[in-house]
Length: 375
Ligand code: DP6
View (cartoon, rainbow, N blue to C red):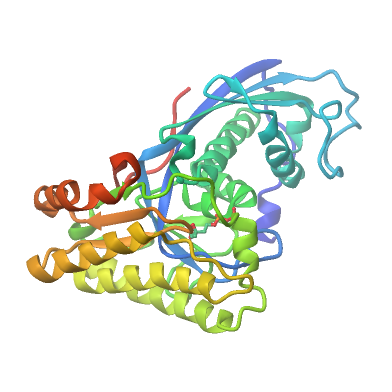
């Protein structure tokens, strides 16, 4: 049987109450080897690996109430169901957000065949991000992960014998259909998404925990996120991934990502901080190089992004401290360093790097252990 078929909800073994709710907290993640380029139904062109974060998270409550519509008016074959066909209300920090409805409705439509019970319920989604909406930090990974977990809790209530293993795999599978990187926001501390020959169990459909023991150097690793530009994303992820279609360097890039994942895997196991710095910084710059060399082309770094990178390189050259940076598809900088270096590196960040942040804003984060059910 194909893996995807394993994920189709078959028949209920128990009943869900007429109404109820589930709440999950799901973390954000920061990719070390980047996912950039996708095909088909949210499948990655190359494998990626990330640190699960801790402080940056989304808390989502999914309220469900049995609807009165005839069972044949399901959402299975519809494009984007209208409010009459399928009722979803979305609130962010208590404020109704009709503008989010389309994205969520598309997601629910995509997953409807896998969780067919969903069309029997009206849904209210109440969500809160620990980081400000305007921070330039994408909430799609933690948001889609939290929502997928709430939907999986509904499924688990209908099918209580479901194993935890299947629960988390399917949650990651569903989350991927909402946003690729969300597949890496279910478990922790390090998650691999995308098929890779060195990683047993890895595949393009859902993320798996890094399948080897992680060296103590990488336990409790810190990620201080410097908010250089808190504006709206200049390049949406859909446009961004599409830039890799017919990109002149695409093939090389996808091969390089696989090689970097092999190297990083060894490094995470043997504790090599120099190798880690080398791979992670190169991945960040390569991601931006792909945007610089695509058509249309984009520069997503800001002058302060480069100033921070230069300061980090100067500090590293002077002190030998194992500090490095990575970037998302934006101007903010993630500063990565081991727990045992936190005192001197924090001091450096406060004194030397904060002046380059918008209004001195930054977020202290660290590697976390995955999503948690709250209610
Ligand atoms: C640069 O997961 O946001 O952060 O699948 O279209 O939702 P969609 O894209 P998304 O892309 C993330 C790209 C990245 C790198 C990464 O997280 O691996």
